[in-house]
Structures are given as C-alpha cells and as structure tokens.
Length: 459
RNA sequence: UCCUCGAUAGCUCAAUUGGCAGAGCAACCGGCUGUUAACCGGUAGGUUUCUGGUUCGAGUCCAGAUCGAGGAGCCA
Image 1 (tube, rainbow, N blue to C red):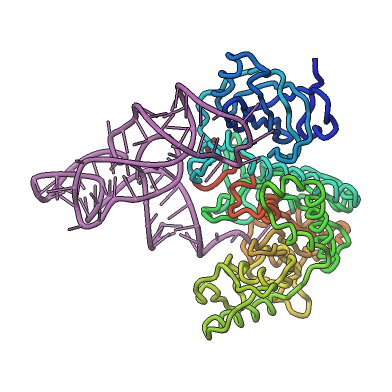
Image 2: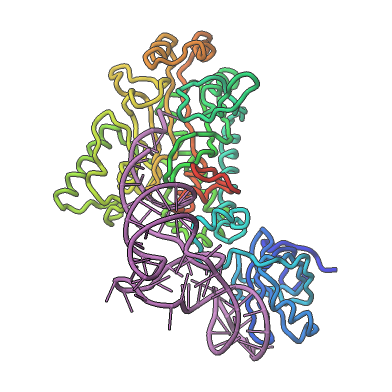
C-alpha cells in the first residue's frame, strides 16, 4: 500500500509511489493518454494515465468520469515542469485509480458563469481554485490577526452577540425574540471591551457582527467578521502606531505564506510588498481640501493623477465628489483619496457630529474628535475605524444626553468612568474588506465562505 | 427607499424594421501518446421568467408582477 500524502507535500516524495485522496477537478484526454486534475484541499495535481498501464474497461471508464467525482489515485511522483497545478511542477504517473463516488453532472464548469448562478451554487463554488485560494488567504489573515495580538500581550475576550435594548438606534440592528422581550444582534463588542481593559489592560474580541443595513454595494455584508482591539492608557497617536504595525504584519504574513494562492488569484504582489509601517496620516480638513482640489481639476479638465502617475479611476462625474465640511465621506470620496497613496492612509480628526457619541473631542477644538479611519489603497477604502474614547464621566454623560440615547442602558458604561478611568483607545478591522483588498477582489461577497447580504440567505 | 440595466438551451450569450429559435461551452457518441478553458467529426438539448394587452403574426412593442446586477442613500 502506497503512502497517502497531500498534494502540498508532493515535492518531498519525488520518485516514490504515493496515494492521493481527493476529487476530480478537471480532465482531458488525447488518444491513449488521460490527464486528470486531482485536487485534495491542499492543492491540485495533474495525474497522467497511459492506456497501456490499465485494462481497457478501466481506461475507457475514466475517460468519462464526471467532474468532482471523488477518487483515490496511486502513482509515481515525477518532477514535471509542464504539469499544471497548485503549486504545480509535479505530476503523478498513475498505476491505479479507485473511484469512491462517480459524481452526477457538476453544474460549475471551468468556463464563464454569472454572479447569480455562482452565488446559488456557493456550496460548490468554494471548490473552484479561485475561491479556494482566497478563502485560504482569509484563514491566513484570521490567523495573523490572532497571532499578532496574542504575541503583543492582548487577551482575547468574547463579547456578547445577543445584546439588550437599542444602544444606538434600532434601524440597523437585527431584532430577535428573547423570551418575553427583544434582543439585538451585536454590531460591535467595543463597549464591553472598554469594561474588559480595566480588568486585563489590552484586549480584543473577534467574531461575527451584524448590521441590518439595506446596503447593496460591493463593500457591505449583513454579517461580517470584525476584530476589535481595545487598549488602556493609549491615546490616538499611540493607537495609529498599533494599527499600522498590525496591518503591515497581516499583509506580510499573507505574502510569505500564500505565494501559491496569490498566484492563482493573479494578484499584483508588488502593490502589497510595500505595505509596511509607517502609513501616511492626513487630517479630515486636509482630505477635504484634496477632494475639493480634485473636483476643481476635473471640472477644469486638468488630469487627476494617482500616486503612480496613472489617471484616477472610478470617478466618472466631478459631482460624485461633492462634499462640505461636516459631512462623512461617501464611497466615491474614499475611492478617490486612496488612489493618491501607495499605502493605506489614515484620515484623522472627523467632525464630532458625524461620529459616534463615545469619541473624545479635541479639547481646543471640540467640533473635531480624536478619531481615525484607515483607508486601504487601490480604491478599497475603509478597513479600520478607530478612536480615543471619552474618559471623563461628565463629558460622556453630556454626549449621551445630546444624542438622546437611553441613559439607563449606559449606566454600566458610565460606571467605567467612575472607577479608575484612564485614557483609552481602540479600533475595529473588518475581515472581509481586508480580504477583498489583499486578494484584489471586485466584490466583498467572495471574501466570506457563505456571505449574507441584503437579498441573499441561500445557501 | 431611489436611479440605471437585465431575464432566450444545464452555463455564457446571439437573434437585423415585429416575420422559420441560433452559436460556443457542458452532456452523449467517435478519433488522436503531452493536454493546460486542448483539438477534430457527430448526436441530443427550448412553455424565450410570469400575467395581461396591441398585431395577420411578439423573444422583439405596451402595461403590471417577480427575480437579479450595478450605483446612490444608508454604513458610530
């Protein structure tokens, strides 16, 4: 009995006879030759059958074995530069084939398919090499997130998914029955993490979050994964240094560990290789000035150029860049701004009025708060939102009252400012948006194995 | 919620001014010892999303519905 091995390990078995256990990804035949593309989850390998090595019936049956049939194949590993595959360069000269199950007609072919069809087949689509590659990169990103934080002394704390009465208005919260009462699916674990830091110093929560936004864009899901670190004795400047180290580590880890996957995706890795701290920082005020200048240039027919000298993409009409001081950025603004930089860029100091109630205002300029978004390059936009939190009890209470929030729900949160309050900061990074950026995806729906969107709950 | 576009074979798409429903891929049959989304020959495959209307005649025009895509709003 030959040794069972994985395709990822084939390079260590050249010259040996091994068995692979997997599925038929694709096949082609040419007279007395059959080429089987076998995938096993770790990679994809070409297996070659010569008619002379098999009895007639077996050979003929394999010629018409349907795509995605499960099979065990045994043969000699050869280094073969002509062989396609992932990682490629090796093939199996087959001696025997055991069909575990002959599949029925498989709906997804190596040819072109539409989005709706593929999303309906998502349970099968994840087997396709492109989806396989990017979901493995997602796993690397999630591992890198935990690895960096754990290594830096952060403690992982689970925060509740079921949360009590509306924290910030119910319009974008999913409501669920909770016995005689109502509960809401969490949009963030941040407020709980602010309690956790007073026990543990540096913490993070990592899990799914839910937003009932009726958003139908390439960057929104109703269920997505977010990691939220929160740090005691940390101001906004220190927070930005943490964020840029964190993001750099994630990108560099993918570049190191997912060479084959990035190749499958045909990702231009030169755009990722320079993602190293520090990242540029511009103020909200400066961003506003840049946007107004871009808009004026477009209207005057002056070419608006990216950081690399190419024309800015994705803005068809200068009116898309309309904005006044005090407004939050829309996606056209982020798309335009990010193309001015080769690295992610921090936008620092948003108007207090458009941000959450808990963000610390600047003492000398209270209309602006100590907040920063991190926008990913190449038009991808916001992947992190973060801020220094209000540490003073009375200032926080005043903000809660200004926004007409239910004070009784925040009693415990206000308590945190009564028993040893300290300056503290935190941020949230969206996993799917990060995956979309690093993998170069056009739409965030592929960045989740089974995405939940406005109009899609199946499969 | 709004704007724009779309729905034809299993899939991706054609179909001229309103005039016989077409192709590629997949499937099936045959050929080929190095294929890379192979190639060559053949077979089969249709309630043109649904409902109604105009017309001698509707895939095509009109109205409504359903579903989908892109964008906007929304997204602390």
